[in-house]
Image 1 (cartoon, rainbow, N blue to C red):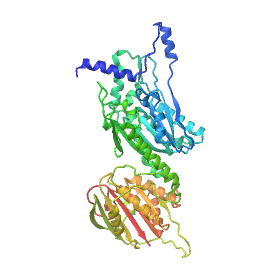
Image 2: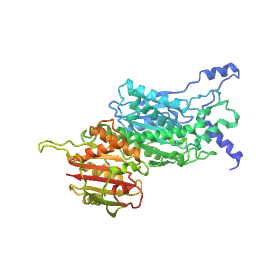
Image 3: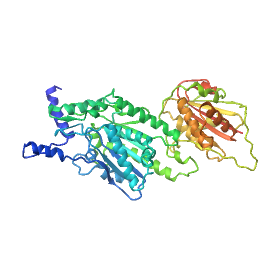
Image 4: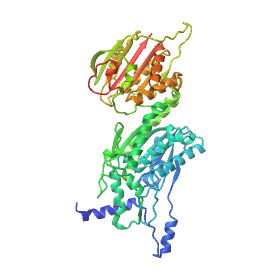
Length: 525
């Protein structure tokens, strides 16, 4: 397409983004100044739907050059779809929308110079205050974020986790899921678009360069937000909190004359569900009916998470620690274990079998016990459960694998071990979760879960176990790991799952492809 043909098309979509120029009958400078001074922007929290007995807060956060309600309003509609369509699909959800001045440019010369951190802080304060005022601090939260709003949400959750104030910290502790719609996790496209807006035919008097700079791929601020957000997600497991459910939606259609504003590689996060929406960067947030494929896809995720929240409310409290409810598999990479963990896991060798895309290995090894816990026959030993993940109720067609696990892990006084290994996303964690929860049916079983991605997560998981089994919290390093292991060995029946243990040699099991493993260790006295 010739450059001259692109200009009119750019003007068309620019008009959809930029706030309309206020018409006046006078060109007097005083009239223009008055217009600038009276400019308002819908900001803060607004309730779009607030049913009695709500169990979930769904919070919408618009993006760059967006608007608290117009971002979510289809062409020809008078109300945003979170107000008209969503309450029918989620009758037990309170629907909130957050507004902030995210204009990157304005025809009239006045534009906010707020940084992403300012908007993040405002979101946190507004939402926490709103929930604190009506006593809903503990209610689960689902965020739906478009474009820049996803970065604002991520940063707000990081800030929340660092705050000592209870109503602020409860925001990140209450998050169940986040839907990202065209969020530039890795910059690039959105920065290019923002610069186009800023340069449009030279009429813009002022731009928000603070935001434009952040959206570049090499931005240090963007890298800091992403690193802090993912660190926060991984640290939740050691705090007894649920991993956050995340779904990433990306635009499939280009903006005329511009292209994809946020390409797929920037809009998705590795390890989480990527979904395409057949629309451009602006249209991907505007659904006209319940039959709109985009609405069906987004609402499907929201309904699934809402069901999970309801299931947690009905779940017996004695099955899992109170703070570990409503958890799912956390997408993590397989990294090399530190050598400092080897001395605490000396288990036997086994043979390899190929089952339904998995490899299962098993073995046994006698332990020499240096500490013995004496109980009278009349006493009932206490069982401990540290499983910061919940089972998948829909798991099917795994009877053969569970049968082989039962064969590889017989109920004998020997230490038993089995390893499942397969590619990421092949279901290893869900298999182990189901197996662990089946053991929980017997009240005498103690079950523990360890994230073995690396030495740090391994130690953090051991600290969580230490708190659960009443080991004093001043222990650290090798002393902590040794004490936890000794205490577990005293238990009459125990199961220990190590997720993402990619170095099987530390368990005495020969390695084999593919390189991501899950190890199950068990013993019955």
